[in-house]
Image (cartoon, rainbow, N blue to C red; front, side, top):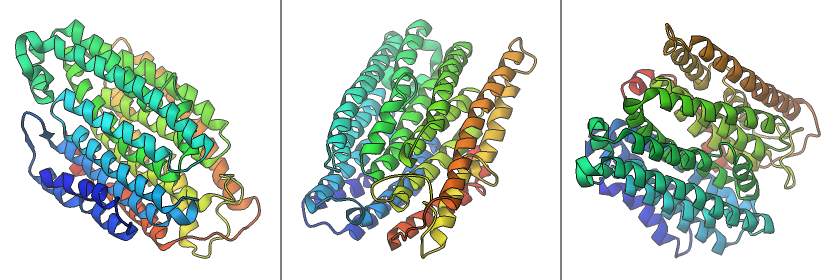
Length: 457
């Protein structure tokens, strides 16, 4: 399994020499082979927990990584960056991947945190690739917010470790052991730790009260950074939430569902109206990503594991594809809406971007259409025959109202992009077309993978 680190290591080493961007894309694609091996040969030891869930998250993240590497081929033509800047981006891209692999496959809570820290620090430098005042300012902002979030996660991990240390010794840091021996955990201490760590993970995904920092950063940075945040970094964070919440699920389910519902629904309320007022694509895509992470969290704690994983995979493909399309939608440095789907010589490009814009708001046959149906069904199923059935119906109704606001915004933007504004000729590169096709094919493949996703949990 250690061959899985080889592509990121080679990308890091080659970044010190003259860059061949096509070779870098080939190396990024090389991670798929060891991931497939892990999927077919799950194992766990003291440090790594390569189960089907981790393998699935890593497979999705690997496909996103290939898409990002394809967009980097045309990045110097889209953005005013020199050879030194592109070398630095690839260098920290390799470190970022190294940290994410550790985090996704970690069996040790401390190792999981170290992987996230690698990814956080490396992303700071990738934000600064676009040498503007705004990108430097946002890099510092991310360093501060990321430090707050990662510190909360670390403090939560320390408390969760302490909750089982007396009975399990050093195995109290082990995800696999904790999930099997919840009877040896001090419930009060673990729940406090879970609460603090969850707030840290939620802050890192842009939840309330820090909804705007993520969109500010993704707006100021080059668009591949937004793709890395939405498709890969958030994958590692949500996987940590999956693992921690599975333990809390067995300790005190009512506390888990109350906390996650209250936090997620309030976040969704804030995000829906911030998104309604967004003025450009980058902010709209960023805020939409927070919306989808709240839905994934809600479906997961409601027992809709299939819905959560399907929605997670669809989001991990949709959002990076849209971020990476921003270079094609941009007009003279502005991500305005009107007329952005006009002026392409290659007519497949506006068609693919249109599919992505409409699919991400769950119009059928988007995978998100099915994940939301299964997710809302799971939410209602857990409340049937209970005293909080009407509360659950009210929660679903509220969520649908907020999603309707987002639906209206995306449809309106799509209409403006297609029918309004001037038609200006836009250049599209072959690597970008290949990237779009790869993401759209990956999304359609999810529609035929329901049985496989159901077998992960």
